[in-house]
Length: 202
Image (cartoon, rainbow, N blue to C red; front, side, top):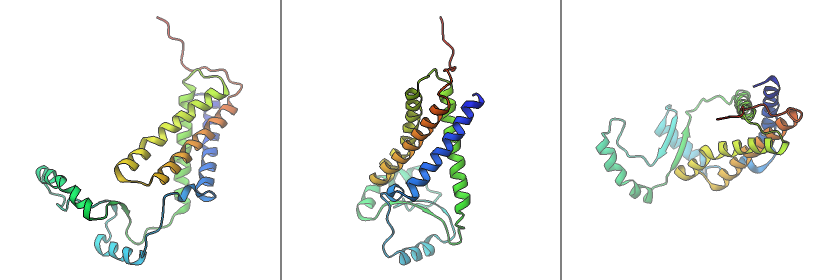
């Protein structure tokens, strides 16, 4: 990847970060499908008493077997899991014990680095093609964004029951972020002739 393509990726990453910041802070996309817990103090107190200081990703209802259960025990419990789902609430919980620091600056830094890497990788893939028109370059990176958006979001909606509104809003935000990368990259590279994959001759 040439310096020009790398520069296009960096600028694209900045554009993506600006868009996602606007989407989450100025538009309702960041809150779509999310709501607060009713009677939150009582629920938080119950979680502190039950889970305590052990952080982790919790799926409920569980098998109730403990960490040393045999494969046969887990298989038997799986057969009765539907009954448990029918009479109990179900869901997924990312739990952090009290005392977690609210490090907004660090989280934003990691988010920016992540989106910058995504943009650079997307432009790197573009550099391996022979696409030369503005529209083709934007379209290529947009397709890469669609792949990234469906990679986990659809699975989380399917298996864990994430709200459809949340899933659609998050996927839309991600895809538009890649569209921004594509537009910026295509603009920066508008005078560059395609120089990617060599012709293959038999």
